[in-house]
Image (cartoon, rainbow, N blue to C red; front, side):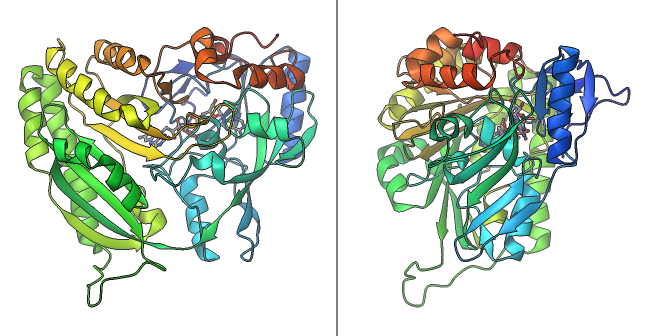
Length: 450
Ligand SMILES: Cc1cc2nc3c(=O)[nH]c(=O)nc-3n(C[C@H](O)[C@H](O)[C@H](O)COP(=O)(O)OP(=O)(O)OC[C@H]3O[C@@H](n4cnc5c(N)ncnc54)[C@H](O)[C@@H]3O)c2cc1C
């Protein structure tokens, strides 16, 4: 579900309700030529331009007081080679539509995050990731990008053509131009065996490295007042040796998917959250109840159906990538800090892993990461919790997800990203007037001028 302009077609708001803006102008290009024309028109009018995705960033990354480019008319796959796995898609395609179209030609993305309502370009631009110690974020699946630059020209970049622009633009925060098309390296469709079960959190932390190494996709959720974590292990079935005679569980039947994902995880959890918001002193008990109610399930299904789940209960989120070896320390500090907060926490902490990559502003640049995400139910106070979290992850050079709430500025981020200045140099070259700037970029990247 995309966030749409409100009925008066003036105000833009993100999914979480944590950012809003009033663009001077809206534009809905349906071709590359129209994207280019919209950028040139903005220049003529002296306005800035931001491409909009689905509005699922918690930060004001997409917010603009200039021209808002709604790319919901610029979607679909334009080329797919099932031999090489190379697939080109228009930037406004949602991950859900992409997954369904890829399945139709026997292909899939190697990894995905928790949801699939983001647009392809929106997800890439903020460094969206899933989990898997041998896999990087979504941007590591990109082979080529086509961009509309500030002067309206269209350029292609890849590892061999304009490699510096490619290194910057794969996680480009929308600062370098409007991504027009994306060429991804996809993999043959695959089935995942999903195994989810509650495990005492100490046990998960003790076995963290083995769990990360032994599973294609490993993550856990932990309710901060509870003793148990929900450990999720998703493993590819194709080519994996099955112990003789081991039964392969079937996909969840439709009624059970509905019951578990919609009723229990959305409607039921939403009701608990509303109760907690009405009576905050109940939250630690509700949180322990949620933790104790965790149950096991195993099933198989197409990868793109296992990776993602519907998220209808709204929340605020912050997430940091930390060096993997520091995870135990971070969880211990959170465990200590959360019960001391004046405002109790309703939502679980989510922990994922990713391989190191070489993309300049990727949170996984140059190091194996654990991702620690904290959340609070919408309408409940979260600032003190997020500030405390930020000071904990700050001690280990944590890097914030570009699309999730954080307070870091260019001065601090420069010390966290070895290629930060190179990114800024490429930005100054391709967008010397700051056509694609907004307040968020001014904070996290500094001036568009060097
Ligand atoms: C419920 C929920 C679950 C989430 N789960 C995950 C998860 O599992 N893993 C994870 O890493 N993140 C996750 N996120 C964060 C989310 O993936 C990112 O914030 C992502 O950027 C949102 O994509 P979007 O299409 O909504 O983009 P938007 O938020 O609309 O835009 C993001 C940025 O991309 C830019 N942009 C959009 N289109 C273009 C274009 N064509 N060219 C250039 N720039 C462009 C925008 O200007 C903006 O700067 C989640 C968020 C929510 C709300």
